[in-house]
Image 1 (cartoon, rainbow, N blue to C red):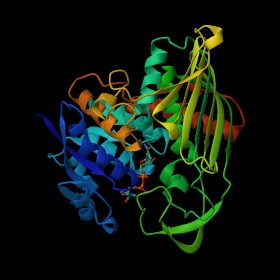
Image 2 (image 1 turned 90 degrees about the vertical axis):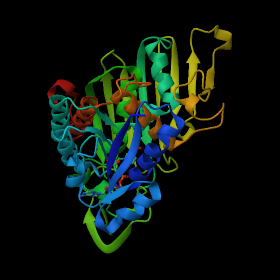
Image 3 (image 1 turned 135 degrees about the vertical axis):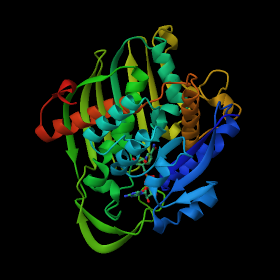
Length: 393
Ligand SMILES: NC(=O)c1ccc[n+]([C@@H]2O[C@H](COP(=O)([O-])OP(=O)(O)OC[C@H]3O[C@@H](n4cnc5c(N)ncnc54)[C@H](O)[C@@H]3O)[C@@H](O)[C@H]2O)c1
């Protein structure tokens, strides 16, 4: 079987989920290429050797530049904070490697543009881990919209609410502009902008107003390294530093097909731990998704006789009909968050082998288009005006 040596740069929360995906993908899927977990990079204080042994990486390194250019490596997977996406991505592209990178593609729009341009020029395959596209329910929604099942889309409502960022959470990289770019916006709105662009098959053409707010303006400075989760377990000193990104960003938008849309991202949406979802309303029907019930898709068929019209909950776990599921478990033996990454690893390996992925992969160019939307919303919030996407390159 054909193989590819993978190097992973970073070993935090996403380092764990990606290690799981690379380890499982060829076990559960008939992958055309088997990934070999060759080398993991971590910072010296993280002890990457221990991580490598736990997750099955053959080698550990504390020198990412050397790892990325090593002739042994065919695919570089980047799971570092957002400011540390562009340097290894550009180095990997220059060395002719395939690159998979976590979202948002970069901390700034100019880095995102440079990454997309460099990948195009070098002709290397790229992917960005917008993992929620790979929930079977979301992939099914994409297929149903493409088949015209809900007709012309008139209205899109997307939200991504979390509640982990209380006052006591230390000043991790997620709250520092130079390290992350933006707060809930780049972290959470990035996913729902990608997901709605993917499901509708349309681009966002205009931002019709936005609001950004930072509720917790100072946090205790972090000591040591991240603990492999979002904010839990991070140690802090008694010294405070400034939060320089948003806690919440809401905006209105228009899609290229004429639909109007609203987007909401918030890290203090108390009681909503990972409530990432959309409602898409069309002329023939509607679809609703909520990640906290990720195996289900809600469908309203407005073409059914009026007396039986109503919301149907589709359990998206039937292997013969629902994307990815045939590779997992029997009907209603549910899958979870980590499976979305394995599904994605499979699709990327298919693309590397010249095969069609199950549903389209967001490459660097596609993720750059999502980053333009995010940037436009921040400009709209700062300047209190509508922004045509043509203004934002
Ligand atoms: N797809 C998703 O659902 C999802 C979820 C969480 C995070 N993410 C994205 O994944 C990326 C990583 O997030 P995370 O939660 O794993 O972060 P994390 O803090 O848990 O881990 C970050 C890793 O990068 C390393 N790192 C930090 N600074 C570095 C530097 N200057 N040079 C080299 N390495 C450095 C850390 O040592 C650690 O190994 C981010 O881009 C984030 O937006 C995606």
